[in-house]
Figure 1 (cartoon, rainbow, N blue to C red):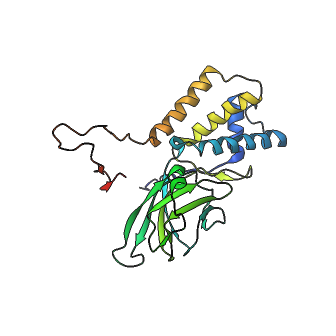
Figure 2 (figure 1 turned 90 degrees about the vertical axis):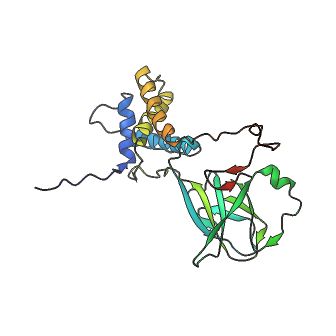
Amino acid sequence: MPIPVPAPSFQPISTLELVKSAMFEINYLAAGENPSAEDAAWGLQKLQRLIDKLNAVRQAIYSVLFSEFSLIANHAPHTIGPDGDFNVTPRPVRISSAAFILNAGITGAVDSPIHIRDKDWWAALPVKNLTSSISTDLYYSPDMPLGNCNFWPICDIANPVRLQLWSSIIVPLQLADLLSFPQGYWDAIVLSLAVEMCSATDKEPTPTLARRQMDAMRIIMGNNALPPRIRTDNSMPNSGGAGRPDFDFLTGLNDN
């Protein structure tokens, strides 16, 4: 008896089909009808803008990537993005975590955490061009078209680092582009695109469409939501300390 072969989990769909599906949802097209070249180009732009917006929302990011890059000795800042020092597409919205890899390339390599700092920390740093054989801090400035990774101290050797980046949805460039989405995104993007199209066609989304769109977005954002970390202002009773401990039992690291 033949064993059925399961279909692939992710079925690619063309950008044009996404645009047509959204137009069907708002009765802009009839079944079997194709959009004009002008309407298709308009739908592509609306889809590009929608995906670009979703890529800036943490709850819409379905995964993170741990990517390894090599520092350039005595170089600062390191650019990141298309054709940057760290060549990735698109330029990351945020770097969630970073690590300096000790003993790289040999048995026993160790990730030494790099503290992610903000602009206020960077502004208050008195000596920004200090050099060392290891970097302990990183201030990421998400400039355009390339972001700037300001490692501190500036590493004086070519050493690898591991960065945790948001995994963005690919923005289509042509109507013939094929896209694959994680479970739940196909419906959420089509329905959200339909709602976006309503505003440009002097239509109001029907209550049914609005509810379906909200339900679809709630599904993907619920899957991507991070569990909250419990914090207290004061230490537990009889702990003998003046404040809460900074050890994170989930990661085994100090939460500095």
